[in-house]
Length: 183
Image 1 (tube, rainbow, N blue to C red):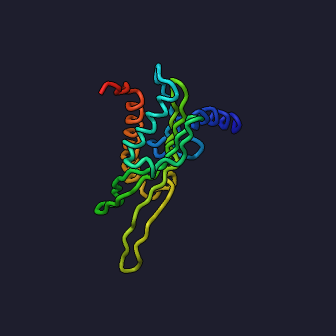
Image 2 (cartoon, rainbow, N blue to C red; image 1 turned 120 degrees about the vertical axis):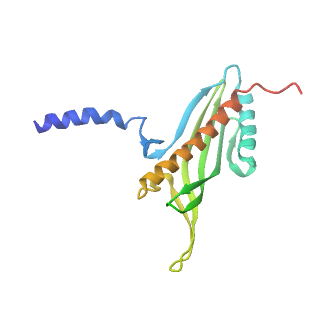
């Protein structure tokens, strides 16, 4: 009887650990890390044009591609950058913190398609001092963040997810937009 119940439990729970696993039911997780990834088809566009567009997108998205791009390999079709966006986290009823969400964005390019991966999320924020302690900058992986404040963290992760989806949408729209060659 006990083995039968264990077998039924395993059959029902194993599929829930697949690709649809999410942190706080919001941020997608794979192998314990938050990751946004997909392959996007861009019809009739060769690797060289896609590479050029990726570089331009980094400039527009992050304002300083020179500071953001960490790897630029035209031959292999890889561009990797590290950037951040700023958010506000309502950490208590009366307190809100500005949080920089650092992330790595990897873009792999082939003829007629590209793959993006956005991962390595790190949250950096400053916690002010009190009369009993000095203030300090906190840096932690998003996977370790806010486990003691579930409701506030869920609300915050909705904001983070929205920002990331906006970045992805910007990338896809930019890559699929026709070239403006007639000026």
